[in-house]
Image (cartoon, rainbow, N blue to C red):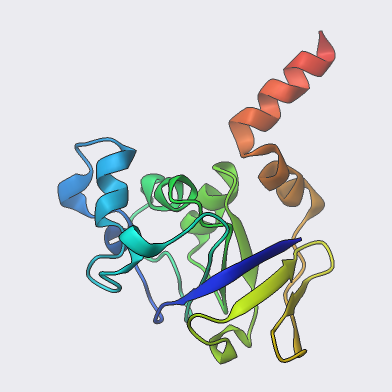
Length: 162
């Protein structure tokens, strides 16, 4: 269960807005300072651990850069909710432990609203009591997010085999 403050973003936020090309030669700290500057200049300095991004359709379009998802994890974003995601971004996000929830009614959620997410129940509870439903997420992907991403999950499996 995740409870967090919403940061609303428009449709078609691309990977260059999440991880700008000019910052890519630096580490995740520098990329994080530039994250979403062109869309929400207040985001990088204001986002807090546990916050949730709620966006329009086609979140994560653009290049396949893994840093676009990694920087959100670095900033403490607990999840991204949108009506649809770019396929490469979707896979990269789960690989680095970022939860994505596909919800056709995501755009009804307001900026600054506090919501509760239950990925296994596929539900988003709003402050007014309304419940929105999300598309199912395969169990292996939810397990990957809970482990902190693909590499931590694989390390854990290797330790269990020893």
